[in-house]
Length: 372
Image (cartoon, rainbow, N blue to C red):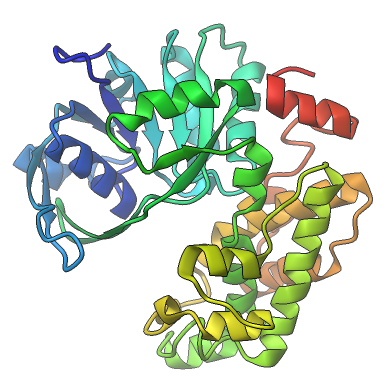
């Protein structure tokens, strides 16, 4: 329920880098915040301090201070009690678990926002709620990307390096997106409405860049422990040509649903003002990528999260719609071999999302209206 000033009460699910930044930022702005995490150890320092310390950064020197939290708990019901907006800030692999924990405690009027949804995160959560017979009138939404660039620098201490200017958000059903934006705007004016979840899901450009660059630089990552520039040294003309093919396949799957996606080159220009006659040139013309090191190991979220929760759903949808995704499937298979896992089994497939047998019209109707 809203606080005494009529502002929403927030519950943040996840106490990693992003979750601590989100909870601390909101509390520092004077909102009531309840923080949930699955495991107790990560919460202990926060409980002892009673909150999170936000450390200023060069871009946001005034964003600093101690952020007192109302509740810090491993009990989802306790976190959700009295909360209006539920912000999920966990790796996409954890969305299903969080959704299942929420089911018994949902009440009318709550908004669930995935930060971010990766590909079809909101659809996965929406489907789980349907399967579990949730009767509460709640809205499920997803952000295209995470609003903060942040790092946890000590226990219960986080630095927010950058706040992004514009974050597209879409709800399922799409006609409820304005309700979500209105509720969020009091705390986050950076959230802007997107037409539908296909655009927040398929314009997830990390799906194009992260897994392929990591897989194609696996030997270098292992031999240097990531001591090279991920986007600049890791993206050679040969690697860029594969990224272009992956991007082309992603766009074709999106277009098969009747949606016009943003290409990776368009995204680089809009997000970073980086242009080029090829994807290779555009990446190397992006000053924001210089200095970013590769991950220290191949067993990193660029594979463990982005493959099952981004590439698999794109390829799975492509198979159902008759769109070839050979390059995407090649990266999935290489990731399976490298980490000795089955990301098809782990990932979001059309079967798990309840989409098998639906026509394009029915899939669009599900996203836009919340029913088939």
